[in-house]
Image (cartoon, rainbow, N blue to C red; front, side, top):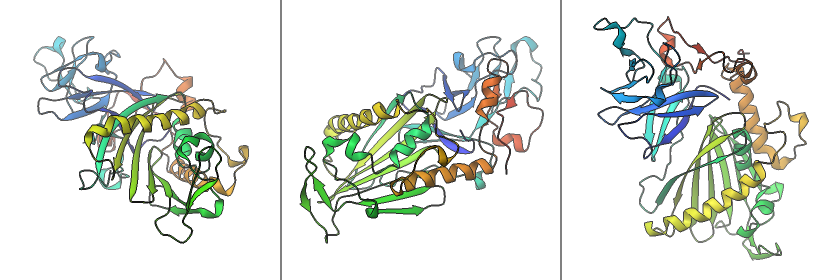
Length: 367
């Protein structure tokens, strides 16, 4: 798992102005709440007094209040009130990590890391959002008992479609139909099939070898956890699907899924369209949940790759690059100290402020 990227925290609908929500992500606990103006905030969940869970408290005076001794923390993570101290100001060390937030597409995102704003990787934007001729639906939220890297790699794998999703009538992909691109914060594949096939026999029923309006599909990622899949069907029928993945732990992933389509634009069709999308997702989940080992190997020599896995290989190269930056969390060390140390993802304020109580998550040293 990696710090210094944008992660989905919860849906807009799930967060009201009365109760905070506790969220587990990257192996740590976070709390999110709204102030009176409706702005969302995301903090480390652990009260630095005696370890109370802020996410189990209340929202009072634009602060989240610890249910144990009533300490109140504002959206910047500063403690503003310690009831047992009366009118005395809380000490400067009374603070928890607070993270930058963006609220888009019905999702609350937080930047979990300490990079200054000018150096941060971008939040992947839904380019078609509120554009004429496109219908937005979502977010849909579901979980799988798998490591998030396995899920992202599934989306970057154009070869599995024929076998995992046969009802779609997808044609067999020949590796010479695959194009790989390198983007600033990720990799991309484009597969131009040129034909549609019968889902039962896999025999081609439509061939357009010289037509630019062929069946094509592609996927690309931004950072380790955001992925887009674009499917273009002849006749100007396109589906653009955005997956924002939340790595809960080494064995669980929560996915926030939004869709854009330029066909069947009536909003009344959203439920039926979403049901078909989730059916496809369930087919993937049935495979991903059973992968072994659960997590991706640290070396390519432990899996036999082919040219059809080029986008997956590119993804793993980016992961190694971010590990080299010193952004990879040492999950083994965290597991060794589970229950003994309350870790926090380092926030941007740690670059300029000292005297923090919570230890930051252990990171694999930069190379």
